[in-house]
Length: 366
Ligand code: 3PG
Image 1 (cartoon, rainbow, N blue to C red):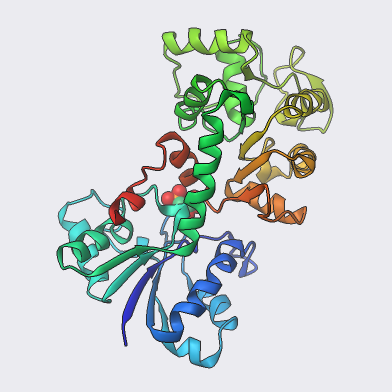
Image 2: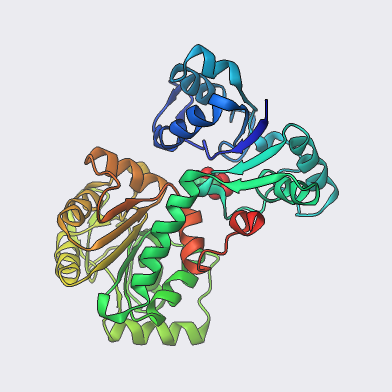
């Protein structure tokens, strides 16, 4: 019987105090594939969890998966511990440790399937090292069903964004502006409207518009290049780069962004900004959203929920991504269907959009 190495992204949020998986979606979407492949094969399942620290064991994930499988299916699968516990997993590609870890994994199977879409932007041993060895040895390598579905839907959003008539809106939020700037620039150049929230918006409000943002989060070490600053300022003036105009503060009060005091912390998008956004979305045929607009960890999810409810009613093509946003879509019982696709990727989805699908994990299989 064939031994298939199946790389999945089982990186789910876990509450270590309660010993509980908080969100199982990333596991649930690959259960069908695990079941199908285990009919005729033995499976060696690989995944990372968290940053690969001591507490990041996959034991709970394994327990959950096994609880969904029959005795027969269970006898066919082996789930390896966190790939990031191996020294070379995230080491320099091609280096001694990387090669040793790639070999260690590769020796476990005869065929390799990568279905870890959310990890395809990482050039790690279990993502690019194994397929490289298998290619040299003439062994079969392939993309899994989930990755194929993600590629199809993300390409659809990209293709729609390439046609100005679709009035694409990219709604981008998150803590760090540095990782999101390439995507912001890319979509502005496609004539899309780019709406920013969270730390990204804070930084632009402060560094480009010179507003006082109180004690709100920014990426302190980040310096915006002068040329880019001028470009982004022009895009704000033209109405292409859209910023919030009001906010919910840490004390839950609504405040205009012109009036912030030194201790104020922008914690969620305000009602006037949401109304503005709703209006912009009316004529759009292509909407992409990644990252919640408020401080998710502190429970400021209301603004994003209101936005998602609005998006749910829209007839536009919708692409939603990012781990926290995924949890919110589940709260609203939103599913991938007809015009809506909910990606399992966070960083991988963004990198896919920036690099037109050329992610290390995808290129490794080609
Ligand atoms: C994710 O959650 O985005 C993926 O599992 C990748 O995780 P990473 O950002 O730790 O590489």
